[in-house]
Image (cartoon, rainbow, N blue to C red; front, side):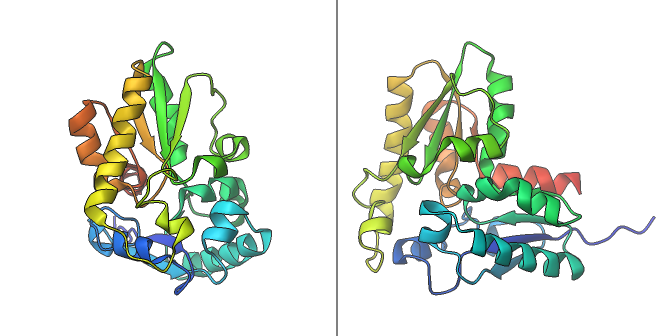
Length: 235
């Protein structure tokens, strides 16, 4: 039987609306918008109006409508699944999934219930996020997370280099310092909550650092790349 080319469409922030630090992070293999992160064909779509303010800080219904239109266009052009380049799009999971006739997986947060099941009820799951204050119960519920008593969320906004995304978007980051910050937050989380059995990295800029977190903590780490690989395998 002839099989179709499996291609995943990735809805990304608008060109020119990405903080300088995130542009630097895009150069790292594992980042969601780096084509070298994938062993299969993907298609990127820059969504007009999508940026740190309209997705992460204040989810915009207007931008959601644009995302739906772009997703439909990609599906009509042969794309077989849709994802996004920001984990905070979890809040739009149901609307996007209902709008198109292909699988939609908006966020690595969709893996949290799976992680909870595999570590057991006595263990906990740590979520590392770009900005803890912006990750609300609505995002968790939209990702199918019904149990929160064994979750603990750790934001990176307190890290000096990482926080330039929000405070100094036109400035470069020190990527080596960012690496140390991210791994340091994971290790601090484990020290504070030693019952942690797995990590889930919400932010799609964090997968380049997942392997070091695995090595340093000895725990499974789920991120955008584990999600997209799983989804692709299902196609």
